[in-house]
Length: 487
Ligand SMILES: [Zn+2]
Image (cartoon, rainbow, N blue to C red; front, side, top):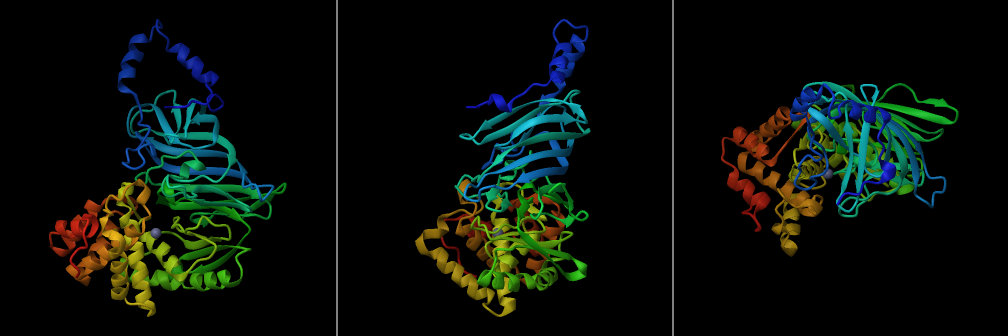
C-alpha cells in the first residue's frame, strides 16, 4: 500500500510544459519513443535483505552538501523541533535514468532543481510499509556516466523517530537540541539520501542554530562559526568517504575541547555543559586516553583511517553510543571500554563497512574484540579471560542458537552479535596464529578501505593470509546452532 499525501506532492510548471511537448502527435514522436525504451527509473531500494526499501538504484552519490537550519524545542517538555533545509547532492548516473529516488522520512520537499533547473517530483510517506521516497524526474533525462547536481529544499517538524525495534535513532529531538545517530536506516529522518552503506560519499555541513547553541558534525571545522541576527552557522567538512549511517550533526549546549593524536591527528571533543559529577569525571578520563588508544590500534591495524577523531557527549540519552565517523556520539557519559570500542569501529565498520546489514558481526565482533585487547593492554583482564567469560554467557539460555552471519533484521544489535563475533575472532587468531591473523586483518583493511564488504570476503582474505581452508571454522563459529569446539 502506498499513501501519496497530497501536501507532499507537487508538479511544477516546468514539468507540465515538458510533458506537453512530449505529447502524442508531435513531430518528435518517433525519436522520443526510441528514447523511452532506453531510459528507465532507478530502483526505489538497494535490495538489502533486511531493509529492502532503504537506498536506491541507478546512481552513485559523490557528495552531500547539507545546509540545515534548526529550531530546538521552545518548551523542553515537548520534544519537537523544526528543520528547514537544503541538500545539494552531486551524483553520477550509473544507468540511463528517466527518474531516480532518494529516501526521506517525515519531512516535506518544497523544491527540486537538477543542475539549477526546476524539476518535478513526487513524495511517498508509507510508515506501515517503511517506504519513504522522493522520486525526481530530471529533464533532460540522465545518461549513464553523467554527473548531475540535485538540489532539494525540504523541512518540517522533528520528533523522536524509532527504528524497527523501537529504539530511538535518526534526528532525535532533545530538550536542548538534537542527538543524531542513524544506524541502520535513520539518515532519511534528516536529509534526502541514498541510504545504502555501499554508496559512500563526502559531506559538507552548514548547520544554523540559535546563537549560543553548538552544532557538531563529522570531520573538521570549515572556518569559524558565523553569527548573524541571533543565529550561528557551524560549518564542518568530512572529506573522507562515509556511509550515510555514520553521518551526524548533533546540536546542544556543547563545550568544545581539543587534543592531538599520533602524527598530529586533530581530536575535537564536544561535551554537553550538563554532563557533570561522576559522569563528567569518567568521560574526561576516558577521552584523555584517546591519543593512546589511537596509537595502540595503529600498532596493530595500521594507520588511523580518517582526518580527525573525537567525541560528542550529550546529557540527553538515546541509551547507546554510536561510532559516527570521526566523532562518535555518547549518551550521558563515555566509559573507557565504550570509547575504545567506538574508536575500533573507525577501522572496522567505518573504513570498511558491511555490504549488507546481515554482515553486522564484522562491525560489532571486531569492536568488542578490540575492547578485549585494550583491557589486556591496560592490565584489567586478559583477552583469554574475556573470551572465557563470553563463552559462559553464550552457553546460558542456548545463545549459540543465533546465526550471527544472518541474525535477522531486529537482532542486529543482539548481545550474541557482539560476544560470539568477538569470540570467533579470538578463536580465529588461536587457529591461524598471531602473524597470519594480524596480516589478514591489515589486508582486509587495505583491500576494502573506503568501501564495503561481506563475511565471504573476510573469510577469503583470512584464507589467503593463513593458507588454511576456513569454511568449516566460520560455519562453526558464526552460523551453527551448537557451541563450537574451544581453541
Ligand atoms: Zn559497536
